[in-house]
Image 1 (cartoon, helix red, strand yellow):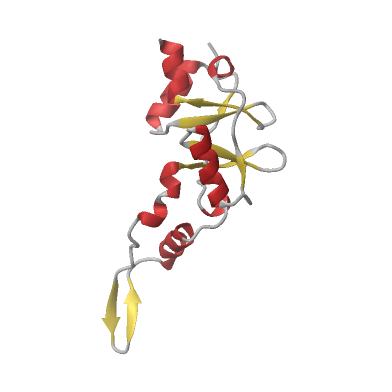
Image 2 (image 1 turned 180 degrees about the vertical axis):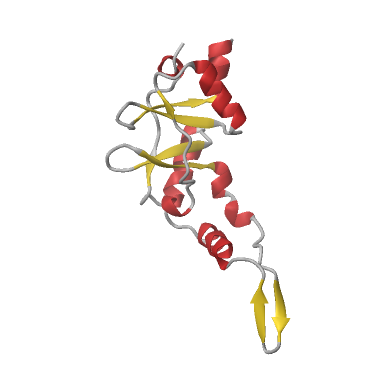
Amino acid sequence: MKAKDIMTRNVIFVKEEDKVEDLVKILLDNRISGVPVVDDGHRVVGIVSEGDLIYPEKSLHLPAFIPVLDGIVFLESFKKLEKEIKKMTAYQVKDVMIKEVIKVKEDMEVEEVVNVLINKNINRVPVVNEEDKLVGIITRSNILRHIY
């Protein structure tokens, strides 16, 4: 059996420019925990889940530093701090989404999809066609329905 045989075809998705508050409403109204993010060509450019949205409740990790003479030397990169602040104050989906998206092709065997979900410790995986366009999504629920 192939991914296309068990995937959900009517995929709820968002765009990078969508507001985070609209995304939250979509998740709550549809009782889902995550969605793919697509560009104008319907290609997957990101994925966002509830975990990405509760980020503002996380405590901010300030970089370690040591005082030297009249200044300070930071022992960690400011890049990580910048990312954390941007995520905590996010207004658009592009600020909270994960950009390194794991995707599967629609003709992948279901057993391989299960391995991807388990090995990558993810709850959902977008399904794309040969043109790399979003055609479906497979969640752990889809797998359970298939098994039972």
